[in-house]
Length: 223
Image (cartoon, rainbow, N blue to C red):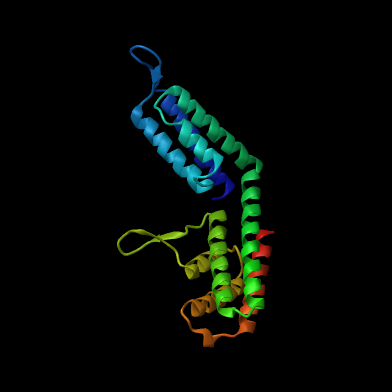
């Protein structure tokens, strides 16, 4: 998602917190409560947002999950405070800087492993690994550019898009040019040959060229 889309989403959740708080009522003996239905909607949608934006292990998600668990005004206020903190991170640009740094580190580590396999003569295993790195990078680029990464099958069930479709969508959105798209198509084809045991249909130099091209693409599009 783009920054403006994320801000719209988090603002809606913050507004939802205020809507829930507007239903606060005194309990018969002590304390206050809010609408159970609105509370459940606020909790579920907020957790879904935090999971997609970060993950279930991130402190924002775990803090929200642990502390926003009762339909009471105090827990709603805690949840709203967490969402306000998330909004500040988005506005200040820290969110994408951190994510880009983590992604760059992960891709770098796996590329080093692929390079090692190539040097040791394991071209087939290297081709599969490089192809997997490339596909994950395409998916991350889609996330950053608000491009859907899933599609409906014939039974109307959400399925992850295949790498070729991600590649086409990214090129059509001008995230990269048609030459990049053509190169990526060739690299994905090489990966598929390696994954299906068609080892005689490509050689070590082609895998080396794939490695250099994917590494260059990741650096260029992350810079």
